[in-house]
Structure formats: C-alpha cells, structure tokens
Image 1 (cartoon, rainbow, N blue to C red):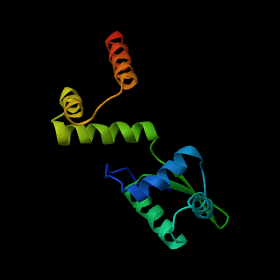
Image 2 (image 1 turned 90 degrees about the vertical axis):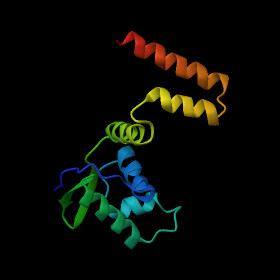
Image 3 (image 1 turned 180 degrees about the vertical axis):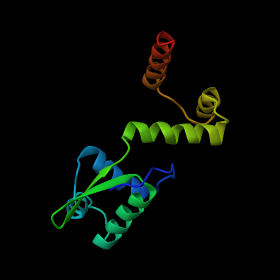
Length: 128
C-alpha cells in the first residue's frame, strides 16, 4: 500500500531511513532499526520516521504475516534530481552558472575536482 508522492521534502533523519532502503529493501522495522543501531534512536522514533515517510508518499509497504516490509517509492537518483532542481530554483533562480559562481567565491576546489567538473561539462556538451 502506498500514498502518492506529494513532493514534500524530507528531514535529515528521514533521509537516513531512505538511504537504508535505497541500499537494501524490502526491510521490516526491526531490520531498519538494526541498521541504525549506531544512532541513539529508540524503536518508537524509527517507527515515527517510517510513518512520516509513508504519509509523505516516499515509502510503501507489503504485509507479510505480522511484518510490514518497507521500500522506497522513489529511487535515490529521482529524489536527488528533484531536490537539486528545487534547491537550484529556490536559491539561484534555476541558474547552474550562478551555483558554480557561488562556489568559486566561497569554496576552494582542488585541481582534481575542477578536472572532474570539466569532464562532466564536456560530457554534457557531447550529449547536446
């Protein structure tokens, strides 16, 4: 059962749940909690986060006996594409060059990072 994804953003805590389910699915609540054992979250907190993601439409579940098996309704790639576009639109008016200009003003990039960016741009040009 799932609800339609309504394009809401997710919190950092909810993102931890999604990252687990993007890597390994379907999982029940106890399996998700086991993968989060390094956090100080209680099982109740984890179930609350799962329910929030269900209500936002980012998770679906199948009932298997007494267990509920959860999985993401959106791929990591799809989610990041949507979040990146919203961020770019909100902060830079949709301008990718504005984003890069901001980084050049505030962040020092290594030669390797610049070469990687050049390679990405070159690939984008080839795809036109």
